[in-house]
Length: 320
Image (cartoon, rainbow, N blue to C red):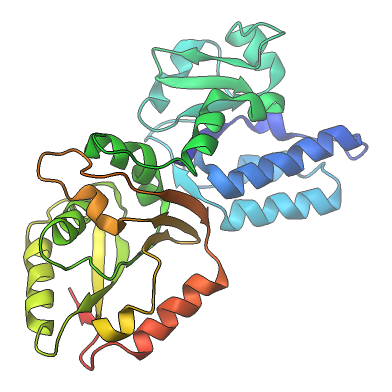
């Protein structure tokens, strides 16, 4: 779903007297990053990027500084020094399985990788990623695919592992807080099975993630059954991707007022017509079509979660 991209620092350098077209391109890139991207950075810091943007006009420099502080950023592979030393396709191989896209300065793209002047980029098969000129990011096939997936439904018969990898894995790898709002997440059958699968995959992809779950119970006394089900799921985890699970149980008579079912990854939301049950088929394939919509989280999502906390059962949250 998200595009994991590496960015050459020289590609973002902009002079104080840059023309409107160049600045507009930067604005569009930052919007695309905010909506669908996660930057893969080298090492422990972002000093190279902070240096590269110093020559920008102030309002763009401030915007980049905010993005470098608050946008999705994840650390690259150990020992990788970034894209400043790309002399050939082999120098992109360390990014295999860590990035989908390398955004490069035009000279690097042309001289080091041989990308034709008239082409925006090309696939680097040995590295398993697309290399693209930064100025042509909007023409990247990787971003185009992500834009298409953002509102494309999930179809019956798709492999569940493909659904996870294409739509949720990159979100899980970059998010610190993940929230599930799903009335039926702990119901018998595919609801609970989907929740178990989601938790298992998140444990493998997450980085000490805090997981919060809002689910319904049908009648008083079901709290122990629901919480014990989650305890059993938690006991099977071994990969360390989940730091803590908070469970809020809400009487069904209250939860039925909430019609949306969604997953929230920090400030991004995946609305799912079938909720987590889309991952719950026992034959490892999606059992029915499911609507899907990826969007920024809105105040309504946070308001809904606040209200659910107010009407939850008295012993919540259960901490696991």
